[in-house]
Amino acid sequence: MKDNNGVDKNHRSCCCCLGIEGIDRKLRACILRYEGGALGMLYVNSSYRRLGYGQTLLAEATQRLEQQGVECAAFIVDGNDASEMLFTKEGWVRADPTMKRKTGRRKAKRKWIKQR
Image (cartoon, rainbow, N blue to C red; front, side, top):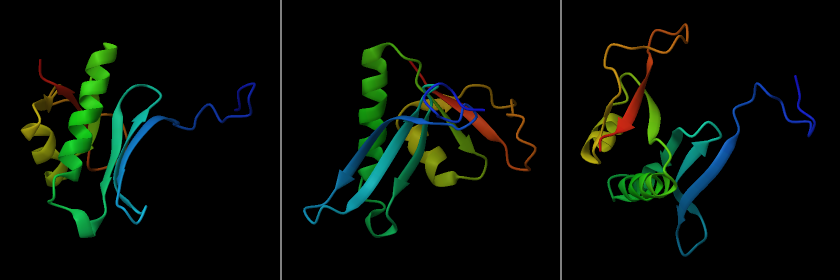
């Protein structure tokens, strides 16, 4: 089903994107914020991992959400240890460690929130 602008209502659209690119103008890392407000799709090019790009993007995105008075939320798939460690380091926690989203998949996407 499409809205008046021809956009699929079931499609999860991106509301905001932050990125880091090098002097060669190639993308090193990026993070998206979905229309519903949740952060997602934190990506760091494999050649640039463990250099602080993900931490920098997460900190900046979190700060912007807090300045806007928006709940800081993200969904992390169980077993994504790198994301869980990064979010934990930045002061995020699982909203409810026992709650699972109803995805029908084995690995659950769990909601994480920024601890205040």
